[in-house]
Length: 510
Image 1 (cartoon, rainbow, N blue to C red):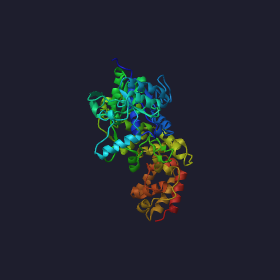
Image 2 (cartoon, rainbow, N blue to C red):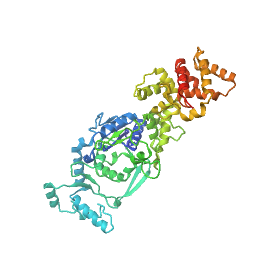
Image 3 (cartoon, rainbow, N blue to C red):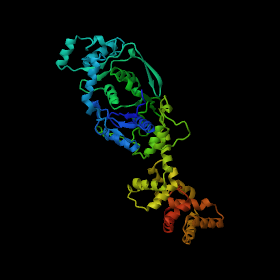
Image 4 (tube, one colour):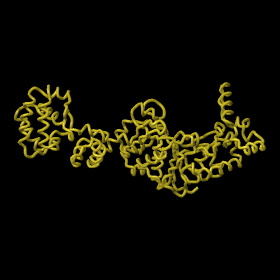
């Protein structure tokens, strides 16, 4: 078979917000496509209309956009293999179900839910497990067990039925997975899955295979939870006569919870205080709100970088990658078989790396937009840029900058009690009065010059620097924090510095 053009798809169901595991699946598909100059498709698999949630599809599209994952073809951008919503492709699936029935690879099953429940209950009483397979199908209410005339009568009468795949008996199915290597299943252990439902819609299995074939998908890269479906999908390709066009399969490892065992869930995020969704989601039925990485202050680049390392590594020491660098470095060969444990602290670390490496201008602009505007504070942007740049290596998020720089925009009206107790002594007001006089006499209020003058004065008094600088900082900041003291007063200016000293001397009481 000649080498196919790489075409991959991300095919979520619009049943709620997109879990970060789903975003990672989309990302790995996207990176694989970019690495091989291929195409990335978004297909909406909405065959289960009972679980459809309004707004979920828009959420999926917005999440991919925020992450920088560009859709080449799909539900929102079109393409020559559309439509890309399975509900809009409904008429075509029946043809393939009928083809499988005609070849003897599928059959009509008229069993009602009540009949199947009764059989399951009887098996439970006998300490058995009921499976609809080669051992049971000949004795059930289906076209394999009933006379042809009876089957036709039921169909003509409009009785509800499903179409089930007739799983071969006793076949060793040898398959290759791009991540897990050689995989073997015995068909006798598998059940006869429903391919076509009584509501006229295909199940995931039939629609998925038909759409992948018709859309010329070259690689199916999806989560580990779909590995048990691989034998059925391979058989569907074979029985429909598409064996030569079968895509290569790759099943990604699970994202595991940070503490304990098992798959990462929303419950873990709620319990430990981190999002599991890319964007904030409001449930349209309950109005429950689930937090999102975007709204929690994460940069999309940091979120993507973190996701890429959940189950993949480049084989080098490099940890910070742009999307372009990821697409060049990515390969399925370096995706792990075992689950990847999610680490919320590592995610914060990624965000800090991106924050620190952004320019002061970009950080300042974001701070103005996200924090100062909300607080209705107007400030010179050049000053905002400078003060944010002075402390950006101390925070993980833009919003946290406020605690580091608020004193530049609002003069302290209260003072940290511990710092007052430690640094404001009986002779402090006298020292601050003398310092005020020194500052008033300085014409060049630059950081370097004020530092030189004040240090000379402290040295001449033969006292410790902390005796002056600690209460001085308290007067300017309101606490014992902040960047270099003389940088602070240069930005505040002489008039504001003097005013804050006066206010502190009037208001700080031991």
